[in-house]
Image (cartoon, rainbow, N blue to C red; front, side, top):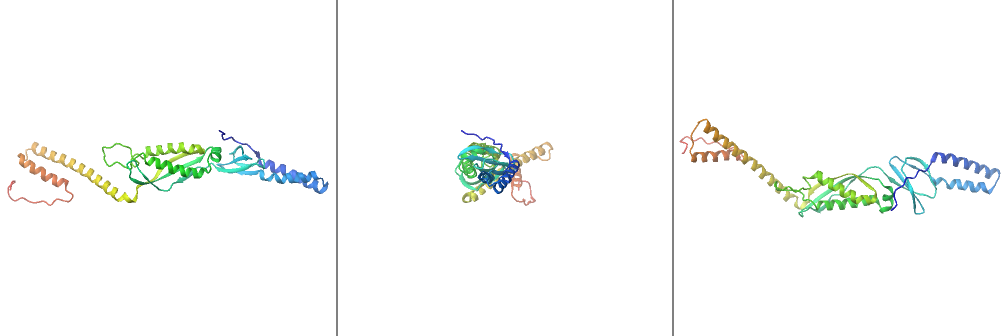
Length: 284
């Protein structure tokens, strides 16, 4: 397999001076001597002009002569090469690619919308020019394929705190690293270097977004209730212990049960409790 090779062409400024001298001599020869040799020299000088080109910073030119790869010019400046060379320009700048939001199924089959943000640049101009038909289109298609594959390897989210499986939402760092590796493997054939790849958009598809939102809200409510009950039990236990230690009042088991019931209602209620003053005895 051919590899990228660097071509160091002649400075364009030197060739401008050389061609200027040649053209002046040829023109003088044509008008003064009228020798056919000077006419040929004049025509040859004009044919040399297509060999001039320039390379901007972070740019390159791939040189090809009748189907044969002659190297790549990466040094920026003004140059001259064989006028018969074809010169294909390939940018070496870093580029951003924000993919469209594609609908895929996650690991458990839920339809989700996902998009990727990719930062890439050409590293091997030979591969970019000759190994693939259109390297920019290749980046778009392979990015889409990598995102679809990645989404099928992980669930969107876990709704059970006991589950430890990595998800697209909770394991964002690990998922992005896996996405980078997948894209590096896919784009290497085109000489593309992946600088950064990460998920830029992630959401449930519209047909299940409402149901999943209610499910998430229910999970959050259950988790909050669990914390409230856990705290309320501790407060009731502390209250009973303090009453017992300080000999404020002696309660039998039935009275303790009634006190625990009342405290749990007060501590776990969604709304403020309305107090009721008992004007009789404790048991009436």
